[in-house]
Image (cartoon, rainbow, N blue to C red; front, top):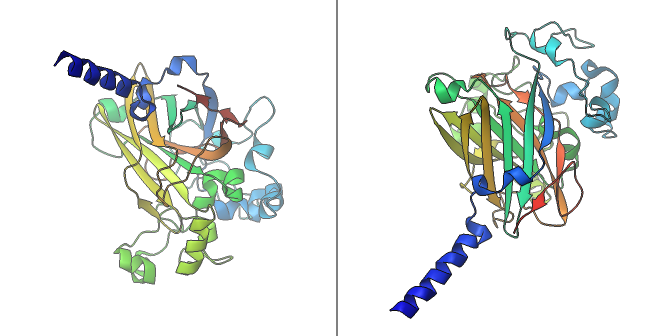
Length: 336
């Protein structure tokens, strides 16, 4: 009996040390240098905007896929060249149309939000930690209204996403945008009628025919090709409620959909800051998950919906590369 007990104890001890069961919150984050991320308020800027004359001199390098957003908007010292304070108060207009970037200004909302990002990995999993200052209204003020939340989009191998991040999934015909598609038309569309929906959610621009909008979806063969060739975008989300956090796993391609819950994590608000930790297997063997592997980098973009911000009224980051054993804007630390 004693021998068997010892064997079981050793096995249990080894299991506790196994990387596969490490919780993201249990990583020694204090030993990992945080990367400073400055997020900004984009208003109604979209993929169509950055490719149009409304983007001014920025249109050409984007439309020709010559330069990434950070190359023009982030200097060597990490300063962000975006007039976000003027966007959020409704005073900044687009170059050609003269339409304002924010038709419904949010009084008192800052144009920027600072966050700390940390990344780690082991032989099996990727771990992310994100922290930012907040009033914590969803944590302390009840579950009524729109919850505070953070969404992280990830991709590996899609050139436009690596350059332009979540802008490739944002369009003026989506729900909550000023030019959102009419519900009755969406409900009658071949794809959306099967989904029993009347709203257009996030979608990757390359899933539509060239120059097309929400209704001009490529056929199933075209979508399958994109799926096989790195077009899928993962989206991981943490939503705060009264002293609790819901973790969600999803994907974006021709639409935004929920996925199997391959992402674990936790969140809290304490001392004036939200903290979110997330964990996922590097390779889940699920075609609707972006495969991550050591010796390569992937790209992520962050959207933070703070202060109970409604729908599109969030802060976003420019895309950044995360290196797993290789260089990246953020180099993930390998843990044992």
